[in-house]
Image 1 (spheres, one colour):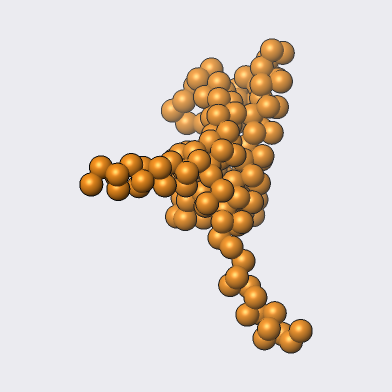
Image 2: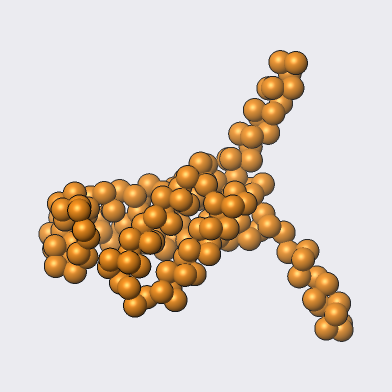
Length: 147
């Protein structure tokens, strides 16, 4: 196979596959973080992190900790299902920006990779292997039947 033939194959990579990998990959990152916060909730470790290390402006640690944990547990479920994907990705992109700006500003390389996956999902959606796609098709069929 020549180099040109190989490069000609790249555009054939399905966006639906990229979207699925983005949903699973970024969802797993946030879910694991949420599960760690949940595990540390009972012994106070999660709240301690928000009080001592995660210095967020405007939001007290007692509110930020459960809010972050619930977002990290809920939004990945939407991504995995491909349901309200763009909104879930937008919420996680917001969290990523907060983490980059206020918590770990020296981790731009990691957060940029997260942002790319989330921006892909915001721009292109969940792809065909998703509830978003199924619901869109059902709505289109219903609209067609009403005409």
